[in-house]
Image (tube, rainbow over all chains, first blue to last red; front, side, top):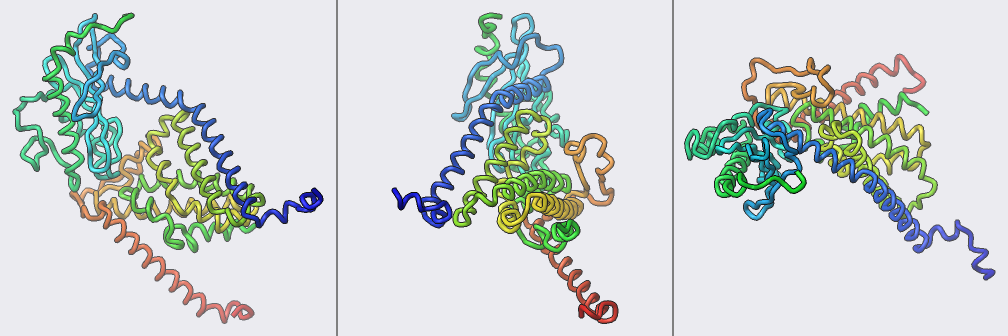
Amino acid sequence: MSIAKSVSLDALRPTLGFQSATLAISVAVATAILALIYGQTKDPIAQAQAQDTINSLAQVLPEGSYDNDVGADTLKAERNGKPVVVHLARKAGGVTAVVLELTERGYSGEIGMVVGINREGFITGVRVTRHTETPGLGDKIERAKGDWVLAFEGKGLDTPSANSWAVKKDGGIFDQFAGATITPRAVVKGVKGGLELFAHQKDTWLASPPPAGH
Amino acid sequence: MEIGKLARDGLWDNNVVTGQLLAMCPTMAVTATATNGLGMGLATTAVLVASNILVASLRNFIPAEVRIPIFVVLIASLVTVVDMTINAWLHELYKVLGLFIALIVVNCAILGRAEAFASKAPVLDSAFDGLFMGLGFTLALTVIGGIREVLGSGTLFANAHLLLGPAFTFLEVELPSAGSGALLMILPPGGFLVLAGILVAKRLFDERMAARKAAASPATTPNLA
């Protein structure tokens, strides 16, 4: 006991145990703080992201074409093994349009997009919701940074023609960007995939009853 | 404390990019446009000030032998907390800065300042060091981004209103003559080329200034010569 008492903090400092303990305590405190902040921010972040989705849904649907909560009225689908969320826009109970939330692999990572399609199978709007494409080069797919995504509006799987669904370099009708072909090519592919999915599933989707409680 | 010296050090003599050659990853990654360089620089400045204050106030409790892992934990936690907080309560700002904040974690300049300055200096000095180092970083990134953008895209400060608000639309310049520009400058090689050019220019300028000073000093300040 007397030996333990005579050992002061300064004498302990150079020992391996003291250093390990300091590091362990630092990491434990940092983890606790992170867990606390995560708990506090989780719900506001989820709310903000849900609001972002609702805002982008509203952008790809014609104004006044629906009277339901498009964000919550959803079905699940799958494309290339990846999940696709299908939002149903209804007016007086009947489905007027669908909005697909889908992803496609871009130049660097997944590009998330929402694709609005009306009952007749024509695009009502496309917005890119998230991406990690090269800033200043591939990011012109964002509505905030360019008009490029507007080119999809009114197009259908066979409109203007079946082989128009490619960038100009590949013989299609959509512009590529100087130096960035892969990014617009991926978006075109994703939108086309959405239309194909719609063509396969539209009978089920368009006839789907409103969710319970509505 | 000599704020003047800290400012000179951070902005020019010991600039993060052109003097210390640190933070090359974010420098190359975001400088395709001046606006992105500015956004990255400002976000980094805020984190650098906060991390320097944190490290300086804890410097007497951190054993020297394990200081580096502790700094890494501190900085990574700080950046993550900032990221989550802005995402939750300043979501509009997050949509603009979110990309940059995640990249700040990999910025070795922040660890560099913790190790080289904040771990040995009082809190206030460290805060100013963080501020000026951050502003110097911002300056370097904005200049590199500006040069690459003008040569590559033929614009300057494109989309600045998204970062700074509609009041700053006046910054956005489209150069009439440049068509699509020299694409190479926006691609990764452009980053290396412009950085190399800036480094050479700074060295030449500093050398000339030093030579001029040396030539002038015997006459003006004989006691120092």
